[in-house]
Amino acid sequence: MRNKINSNSTQMKQIELINTDLSTKICPIRVICVLFIILFFVGCRKNYTPEQKAYIAKIEKEREAKNEWMKNDSSSPFNKKDKIEFHDLNYFDVDSDFVFKSKLYPYSPKDTITVLGTKGDERKMVRYGYFMINYDKKDYKVNFYEGNIKSGEKYYTISFTDKTTNKETYGVGRYIEMELNTDSNHLYEIDFNLAFSPYCSYSPNFSCAIPTKEDFIPIAINAGEKKFHN
Image (cartoon, rainbow, N blue to C red):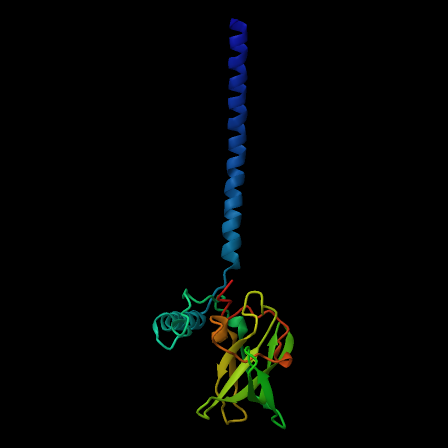
């Protein structure tokens, strides 16, 4: 019996020694793995310039202000007929890679086209011109439109779809508000971080213009507003 007890005791000591040996081997491996993960994420982080940091802060502040307006203002689509429950709008992280510079290249002639709304209504838009942007060493054309509100006042916009449409972003498309500069040499800023979803993306009570087939940009524009409803 004593021999059996001694045998069991010896086995337990051996197991303890094995576990101790394993722990001394595993611990350094764990430390190395943790250090590797930390270094990986630190290496992946962008080193922003002071100007880029200021730009990101500006966009984020504008997004906060828009959330406040959407939530509280009586003119907000969330506070109209059949009130929609509000939560903060969803956005991609601000990315300076989706900010471009381009001259405006006017179309000749500037065709007036019929653009359909999501409720089947028609509206007239002038295909005024286009911009050229370069992304990942390829050039893409972005159309620039002139429209009129009910008061007759003109407005200018980029309406587009891309490879995120109906996936990460609203299925109809998105828009960027623009202003026309009469200087033919003016260099416009096309900032897709400002791309927004129309009111119809929040509530079916609204109709919004559907971008045309020519407005498809064949890249994933991971910038601007995402889908509101999942």
